[in-house]
Length: 575
Figure 1 (cartoon, rainbow, N blue to C red):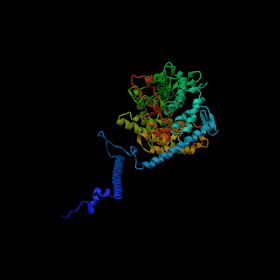
Figure 2 (figure 1 turned 120 degrees about the horizontal axis):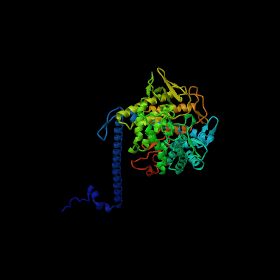
Figure 3 (figure 1 turned 135 degrees about the vertical axis):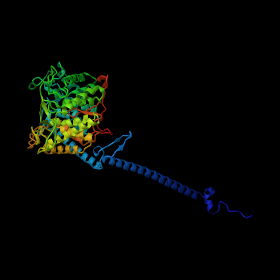
Figure 4 (figure 1 turned 60 degrees about the vertical axis):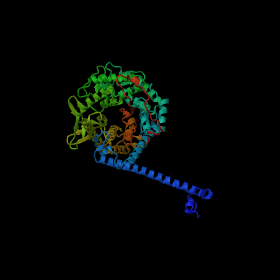
């Protein structure tokens, strides 16, 4: 009988396992082929999956870019709430975001270089003294020898990431700073520069030496509030505690000098757990609230004995300015709770009064704020009043939509005027004050420039609230004017005359504390010293916002603030 075809014969034999068991070399070869084929298959599958993942990401990016482009063009964007919101190019990333970010980084570095130059000049020629006189290369103690420039610079150095400079300054504070001086200090200047500067350094670094020193100097200032009305005297001897007012005010206290300590002293009570600092300033504020008129505008002279206002000028410039600023910022400092809503209410009342002082020029329609004496208006505005646009922008978010738009629009109009204070002079630096005349727009009055920060402060606020890059451009132009006219080999100086460019011999401490800091922040992401977490005192020292609750004493609010030490990987300051 013939045998049928076996499965081991012909090509089918290669499918029989027995075939390979008898031939180990071919078994090994088959195993290698199997392994290689398996890896090739799975590697291809992996590549396909990765390709699909990358394609998905690219599609998502394209979708986001298309959405941003629609937003720039003003088309509605659907939100998760079902509402439609319209955004302009000011509030969205533009198509040249990469180039703009690179430009901002370059400008930020230029400002940082200016800070290094100012600081190194101070270290070289005026270390430990209050201020540097760059032309004569010596220091001068304008504030009693408290190291004003050094303390004013602490947070600027920290924010810019100048670590070695900050540590050198910190060691001087720890080892050399002494407040036991037989000196008649300004309560206002010492509070905003020294107490504010030390508290800000503490909030940023967490180094307790700054808090201890802030408590020391604040304790020496406290007797100034020991008046029958609670309105403080404006000068005090730091060694003996004797408080008084200047003779040229006829014994009156100055509005700004007496109502610009809330932020620092409330913060000190929160950090130390000792309520006495807050009690002093809030007792004074109770008196201010009693005498606040229906338009919210107080004259610049207040009698500290009776607590009543004296007949004098109403102004948002010198001697009036920061009183109104602190009404808003005390509300923000307390995180806008019911406990601090009276500050906001007083501020809104004052802003209604401010609106009655607003006028516009011809032919260029520059918006400005008049001064007022009795019923008479004066068409004069200090550069100091150029903090107002920033204040209005900051406060606009607390209104309803219609009022918010009105206030923000006014802020932008005033900022245009303040920028033109600079643009209208040959040096492109602003004078100290300006007058307005029908048909002539504006003209400089007092023509010196002492490196003031108010305009660039407002530009920083407006850029953050509107996203409009013209404010960055304006700020850059002002910075370049400082570089051209005020920078010398041994620091920065003011100008005796913005028309001729004649230089003075003083580098004001606020140039390092405020002007350069605000310029640096103008070219930095808004997350650096975020308005959600920090509030600036009137010397540009950022203080952490601490929520104040109804029924809670501020001694219970004491806690170390969240700090960001040098080198922290996420959100490192100074990059």
